[in-house]
Image (cartoon, rainbow, N blue to C red):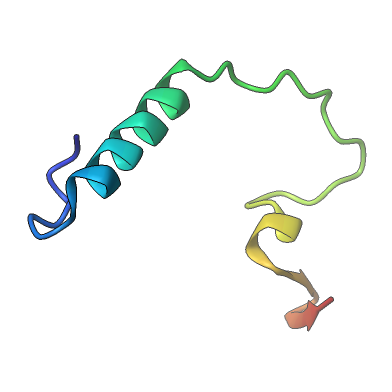
Length: 59
């Protein structure tokens, strides 16, 4: 378990966090094709907004 886990969590929460960490480590990376004509940088859908010419647009 990571060092960031608060000590006051119940055992069930600690177990759930440990199981989630194990699933993340065991997950295979996605084999996605490259995007043609896409933007550089972080995925806009994941971070909740699009930026074009300095203007951020929520959707």
